[in-house]
Length: 216
Image (cartoon, rainbow, N blue to C red; front, side, top):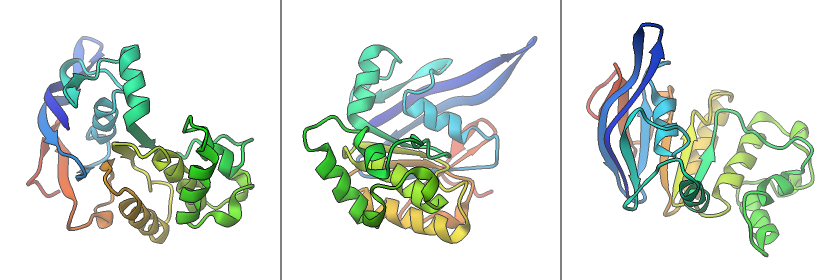
């Protein structure tokens, strides 16, 4: 489903080069939950952005269903149709209600119905008309999850989605993500290994490279 070939990310740093990721090769299959772990600054977030087509590699390719994510207009359309995103910050639109924030993610005649349905599943049925500032941090992140899942993406990318939450709320959000993703592939970066599940495929990002058998 998602194939990574010889992926490199290098930034110029004066007369030197700052290597972020080096010679990354792997494959992610449908419906997998893949979690990238590693110390701060290891390149986890950069890898998530590269896989999602939001960042362009220095060299190498990310291939989704046989198509190279090139950063061109056709790639943007493919991202919109197939990918969902949850970031460290919720990025909700402050002047829109909870329901409106979810509706903006989907272009269909029944967007309101689908949005209400998923918000109810996430326990937010009593908050549909509230603005983001009226919610707790955990509730705002649930809205962000609803916005990402409402169009049933084939791949859901999550970059440190629980970074701003207390541990109990973080565990609750992770449980919701796993229960709601259904046939969606979940690709996540986190520094908190306590959030991992035995069913997760855990990939360590360390020293510019990846390793599925390395414990930090």
